[in-house]
Image (tube, rainbow, N blue to C red; front, side, top):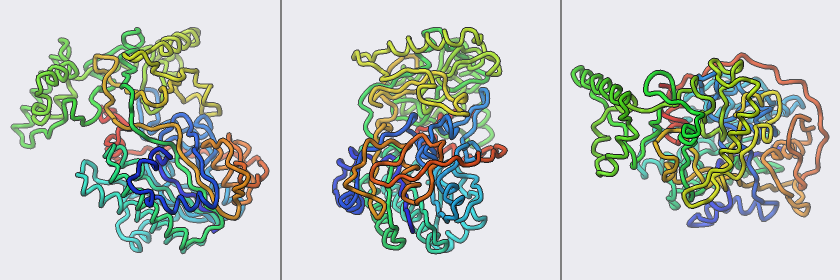
Length: 542
């Protein structure tokens, strides 16, 4: 193998430093000792679905077309997939130069395109995904045993510890089997559990260490089996404790006169996920009589909501009385949803649709199905939004945002018009943004850990000149650096440059990537997994 790219989701030096035993990253440390190691600045937004495509295409989302886990068509949404990806990934560039590639677990790669080699997709693919070549996943499962994309979710710590190790080992074993079978010049294997453990068991350093130890073992086994000339290890973003406040953007926009709400019909429910500090969804009655009671309760809650009693208000009262936990186990999910206030997208002038996008969308006439903002007023409305959001301070007097800017400050390219209109970057990523309505602008973060802008990069091998240093690496630089290691021209569409430790190759204009008809994701396991991790609202499909 010429070049091996190892992806470790959410890996960053602050997380490495908190591991109980540094031996959990001994292989990574050895790579750094004989090569280079540095922080790696992520892109905006620094989340899996958008950041990994930026890493493996070298482009900003305005070029590759993926801005988050969700894709919006008017006020409708779907989970993104590879038919949304508009830029050419590394393995397709390698293919154009006669090089074979093996790719395992890369997010947003389903359904795959043809190239010389093999691909088993990662996040946003269905549980039994289409792979390249067809049928290869059956071969992988025959050889390595159980290979799943998603865990069952909602498991205890002991079960999760076993599950995480199983996922990590299956990725490494699948990659080594395919590398042995296809003998690729380029390999890319991605490990997701280093991110998952932080979302599902935040602050559990012992479990975090066990996951990193498993990943390190797989990296070592892969280096031994594949003997790559050059190894580049990189993460898509960092992660860490959320030390600020939760800022409810749509609550602020409602008070400022931009957001309209409704308690029935289309809109965004405010019920996001199972949290100990709020009402939690309970199992609904399973028999016919119980279902009838549930329907009646839901109808009653809907009427109460229209009279001003919403689930949010009820939750605050129950929390104050210490009854939320008890009531949540008895109240069925459809009852809770019936009483929630929703953002009325068609009636609103501007709103946050998805906090992962890090921004606010303007409901523009002529662009959006029921747009209410006249195009002649677009810039003035956008400036008003920017001024209002820039002024927001936490109850402690700290700025909520380090930057509020027009979308063109971060997104450029043929897909940029699908981005948010106003980009909102939280201060130090310590302020946690949500789109739900809870009556108050601020609260305690519903996710105790959140993504950070700084990831990491480590590189060693024949193509790496450690004396040249690493410079100031950005996520966009990874793909052109891999191209240099492979000895192939980088695309002139890439936004990054080869890092100083590799000998740069020339730029080349490649033919445009052929567009494909978009296919829907339509997989409940995908949406449930993303909701469990706090990436999407459980009620988005209501």
